[in-house]
Length: 64
Image 1: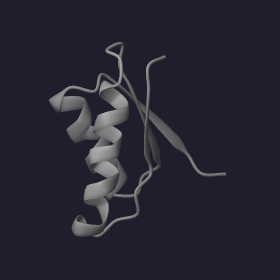
Image 2: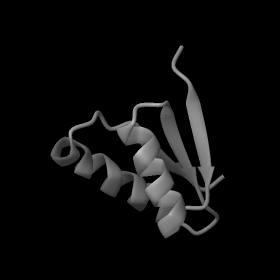
Image 3: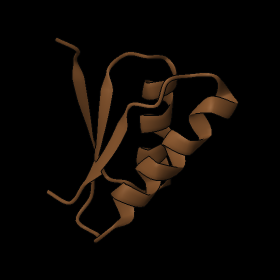
Image 4: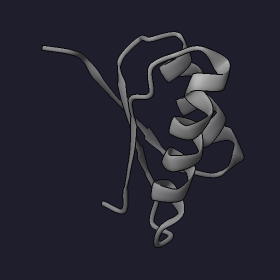
């Protein structure tokens, strides 16, 4: 089973941490924030940047 890391806060710092964790393939990343649709949007951005940066996307967003 693959490890999963949760990043609390989907602002600039949290999203950057999530992207680096995904890029370095440490684990699947769950991005969590209380603001509606913010973590889902950031996760989508990170996943869409993955082919350009050369890694497999593994980030999801959640509100709770």
